[in-house]
Image 1 (cartoon, protein in one colour):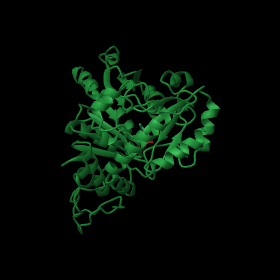
Image 2: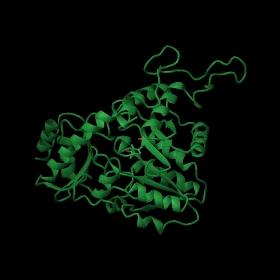
Image 3: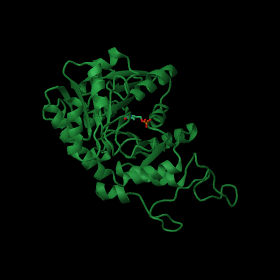
Image 4: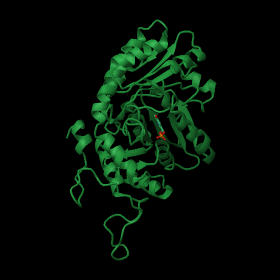
Length: 379
Ligand SMILES: *Cc1c(COP(=O)(O)O)cnc(C)c1O
């Protein structure tokens, strides 16, 4: 089955009770048993719920995995991965990282004795010098947020395999429409399903997908033991979102390209970060591992003035000033004061998150309207 068909049919069957094409929202905590242990596979909804199972099956299918687990948020999913580790273990992570992930690593897991190294992984050779006997996990985000750096998943997977490390890839920005990290050798795919998978800015959710039963069992144990699951209604909504992922992504990519090209030719714009440009430093890897270049575009203005960036964002009419990304509507954000505010200025500026950086999540509206909006806002 090819990808577009999988989003609609992969691991999905009509519900057994009445043949409903979409699974019912099983709004229940518990399930009647005929005798102790005499149940139909469901006992308590933290452990499993049929609507969540339907979603998890679909998630496994679209990422070419064997098992998936859905969580109450993307960060809850990342939290579950980190709980595979113990005190004294070390993690090598991308340096240009979603701010919340950085906060979870530094403010929670460092306190539990886990050590993190933040490395510029666009050159895979940089990873090796951080590997020692305590290293257990490589954490990759690609494209990175918000600088759109592309990391070679296959080459990173080779390093992970050589040293028997787990490789986890945050696939939130790309989605399985653009890249499938398990096929490229990753062990764990993580999603903030809040973004493109849900796709309509109405659900906060996370997911993990793997293709190894033993690893799935360990993660499932953590999911159930720690309990950061999502509810049945949210599971239903994200399952519905997945069914249009491919057509939404196609339009996100088309509009992303149009916006990136418009900005690149604008005299007031300094730099545009979008992996589809031939002069993007990692364009070749992007072309090799991604089907297209996505709908996320970041840019800076000439002079790099904080106030000017704020003014541009405030003038936007169709792009809504808001956190988050990946919904049908276009959003604009100012990483330095919003998503990356929890990262110290010196640290964020090293990776390019400067004061004038604006990040766009280009939606699926008409391209002409989006460009006209940018035009009036930038002036
Ligand atoms: C939003 C996001 C997260 C965190 O997910 P939540 O659902 O907000 O908890 C992690 N990684 C990336 C790349 C994100 O964009």
